[in-house]
Image 1 (cartoon, rainbow, N blue to C red):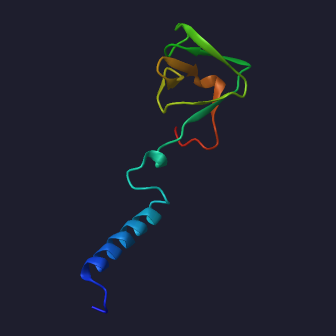
Image 2: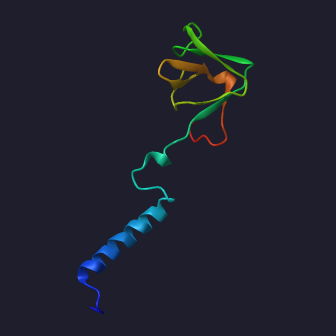
Length: 103
């Protein structure tokens, strides 16, 4: 067939389909975590207490200064947003960054 072996046409076809899928997915490989939600907060209080659980009575494990930016989770309980394992902050004193896709 025009001097191109059938095996070569199959390879070209598979690569073409893979390239089209990559382009349709916004340039992110299919199944990649790079398209995952981004969740970051900015501290709006002068000093923000980071607590070990979602509540005012939970022990303070650290603090964050105004305008600090931190990765966060999509999880919110009792008005507190989870930053990570045993790290929670009051939603009242943080704002989602402009590039966050979490709620």
